[in-house]
Image (cartoon, rainbow, N blue to C red; front, side, top):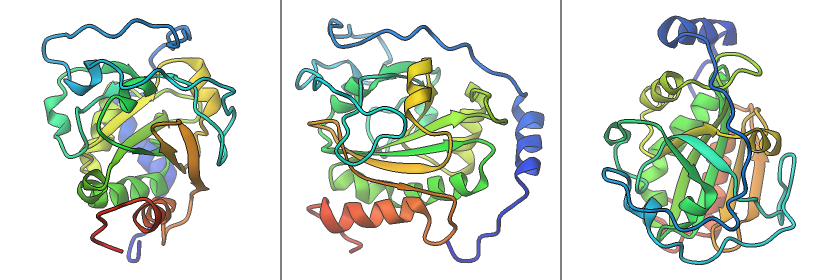
Length: 237
């Protein structure tokens, strides 16, 4: 956005290391959710993530290595800050949760905007802020948002829980913020900034773009596509 300046990425990494500590979480072994039983209700968990799935997860073939328009996403597993609905406070999430793309389908939303980012990437933070500014209108128009943080404070390093929390606080995020919980998701999604818009019924990519631009950011471009083509009650066209 206009007026924003790029900081030295090394400085951002150092700041995160000093604040959160540099480290990584071990990946859990990949396991498929295709035949998983419905999740059981757990006290204190978001209600929509534990409801009966609206439909079975779409079958493959699935896109791999930076999915393109028309590719279908596999039901992979995430780890991080899960909220029941866009617009709720992440402060209500007291502990990290493991959830899958099927859980994100299990809402009243029609579309999922995925913003892939890395903690060390300054332009990624700009994109996250752009999504935060439009999150309420996106939610009103049937969209959910996932901030998918692939790397933490260094290349090849997983984000820690403290880094995810600090990232959400710095950008005032009110939507899901998570990292990969298995190696397969990390291989599918790029660590560089991208935006993917997903049809939650088919789990197919209907728009995607790559970032590292300041104005308009790739998030702004994705938001514009959403409001111009998918949103029935858009207020900012």
